[in-house]
Image (tube, rainbow, N blue to C red; front, side, top):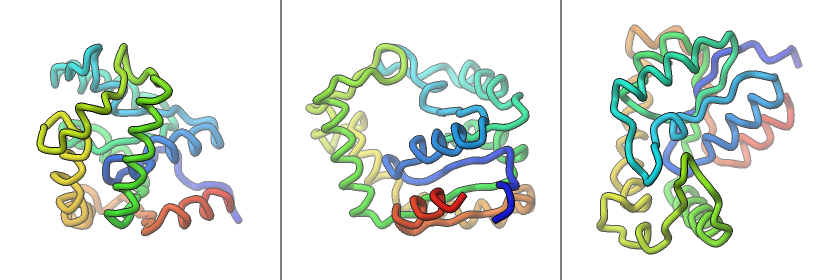
Length: 180
């Protein structure tokens, strides 16, 4: 297999689909900069960075020659996608992502994993699925929209330069990564 042909990569997909995990693995494998949009977006105490601050952080991060971005933030797409060469879309079945979210949430809560800034996962908050602060609420709100929007976005003239690597199941991504 020839060497990996891309230096500016975006990994997209539903919440908890494994974007950051795959992006970090690719960045480590090829010695690219790993850019986690959540880390640029979230301030301490789960406060969102002001849009202009977030966008400046993104601009600074993508100045690198080679990078892998994990995330779906609309407010930064116009900065990232024009410079990207490939989109890796983790387009997994709903229940696969749901169970990955459940495992990840419980693990982060149980181990008190420090996330961005001073943030920790709150199990009670996420179990309140009616709350806009719940990741389950976010999954229900965005999953099907992303499935519809991603192909439409890739068809836009300004995104036609992007190559697409599309995975329908986590096993496909794992096997693909193993072959690189």
